[in-house]
Length: 104
Image (cartoon, rainbow, N blue to C red; front, side, top):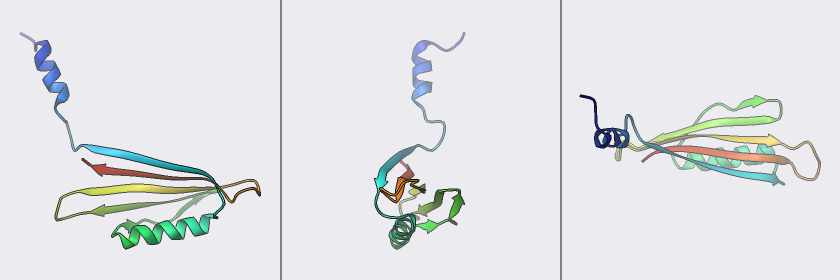
């Protein structure tokens, strides 16, 4: 006999791997330029114990990854910081995006 509906629901509730959450923060039309934003957030993340990946550049888009593991709690977090330069003089940065994935 196959599984009944209750067994299926219990199966669907059971995680098949580590559970993570993702948070995305996006800012648009920022007066600060890319160099200031990249340096500021790199410094801030490093001061909080994050490892910073290499800066990647693709036309007017710049990004770096960051990660941190906490041996004491077993928690970890990783993410990507991205800045897109503006094409107009009204503001320097079109968009800044920070994605963070962390264990729950």
